[in-house]
Image (cartoon, rainbow, N blue to C red):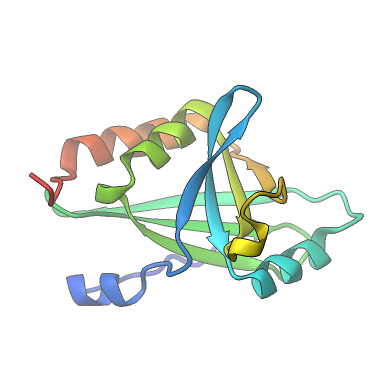
Length: 147
């Protein structure tokens, strides 16, 4: 999986994931969900539908003592589907808390027409402790801009 590098805060901001993220209810708990365009969602499902697929996920954390960014890389083995989602963690503490707790990340379509559906694709993280370490780094380094 390619590691992305950014040199300036402006580069980080320019590469942020635009479709957003949310939390979804699943088995009595909350699961973090990365939203993608309906086109990208359909493309992803088309590549994995009917196949036994494993997903490789990598959380790459960038921080400077104030701003924390997490680059979430998802690659489906045996397909050419690989995506990076750069998230600004300062504003998403609940998202990363749910990730550390559940060890699952979901992906779902971003358009409102799908808002009430159960149309999400869930991915089990290979190592839940990586998400827990990421949460600890985020909590220690993120300084909320709302203070």
